[in-house]
Amino acid sequence: MKGWMGKVRALFLLSILSLILSGCGVENLSAFLPKGYGAEVSLDIIFISLAVMIFVFIIVMVIYTIVLVKYRQKKGQEDFVPKQTEGNHILEIVWTVIPIILLIVIAVPTIAATYDLADETDKGDSLNINVTGNQYWWHFNYSEEEIQTSQDMYIPVGQKVYLNMMSSDVLHSFWVPAISGKMDTNPENENTMYIEAYEEGVYWGKCAELCGPSHSLMDFKIVVVSQEEFDQWVSDMQNLDAEATPETASAQEGQALFEQSCLQCHAIGSNPVAIGPNLTNFGDRSKLAGVEDLTHDMLVEWILDPESIKPGNKMTGNYDVPSKDEAEKIADYLLQLKPSEITPESASE
Ligand code: HEC
Ligand SMILES: [Cu+2]
View 1: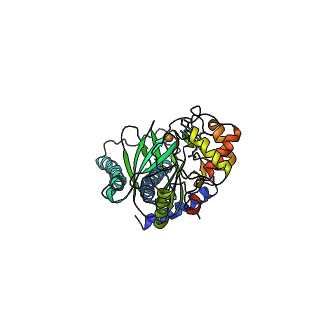
View 2: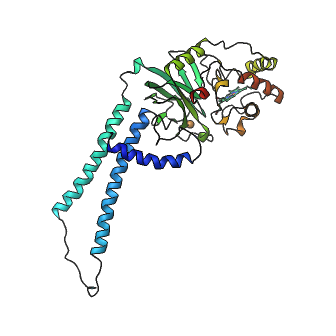
View 3: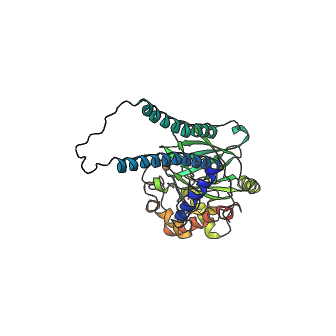
């Protein structure tokens, strides 16, 4: 699909690019700027369909214009009725065959891509991540590596990564537009998709299936790093001490408070408890709950009143709300959970 497709694409991209760059400022969130295999294949099919549609549109418009000009009612011929024809054999065949050909032109690459993207032959030899969609956050379980993490998924660049996806509650849909197409997460059965990212960086993901009041806030990220950085991250996550004592007195108090009233839902370390997001590398994240900039103030606000940030979330009402002072200490504790140098920040440099 190179050659002329490439040129059409370049032209289209240029116009789209100016639109996007002047837009909302979130990078790496566009299916029109593919940085992964699935997204690239999908965009090629979008362009083939678009080319067919433009072709049909132009032909119809040309015929329409010719007929309009040529067969207008002329002066003095107001009562003229042209010769009536029906059942023209050749015409009937032509306008049946052309749409069939056009549909084949669209169908062949679409079906080929569908099979290609559903291929699972090298699943056993690849990195596998179990993805769980939850109202309104994402959990990632690297079962082979025994790593649990939430919100930010780390993968190595240029490698096929298999995602085995389910939901813990309602239907969600995993979508990282710049990397790949969408895949539903269902409560009953596992769906599998592979992704492959071409460039290092941070890619934004969205839930693409209406799942409740905070559906539009169910953002997540794929952090694409080099193979060495990925190995480093894996080793950092495997070798951390989840119960390490923080340096400052305030964070130490925060740790005790956290263990008392938060640990039943939020694991730290490789504990598979995932009623709420795993907070092992919470301090390494750039976003709080997927959406807000991760600052001390914002975190305190979350701990005191998560409802004000994410309406309908499953933490509200289900925990002992600490005092402001306690919340500050818990925030001190959570923000120093930085097990790795490999972070969304380092990946986007
Ligand atoms: C009943 C289970 C439960 C308890 C108890 C609980 N939480 Fe949560 N927490 C959740 C859920 C569920 C979410 C995900 C909310 C969302 O994003 O929709 C969450 C999200 C969070 C987040 C955002 C995480 C991220 O990925 O950015 C923080 C921080 C947090 N909780 C801190 C706390 C603290 C501190 C306590 C104790 C005072 C606590 N939680 C108690 C369930 C719980
Ligand atoms: Cu969702």
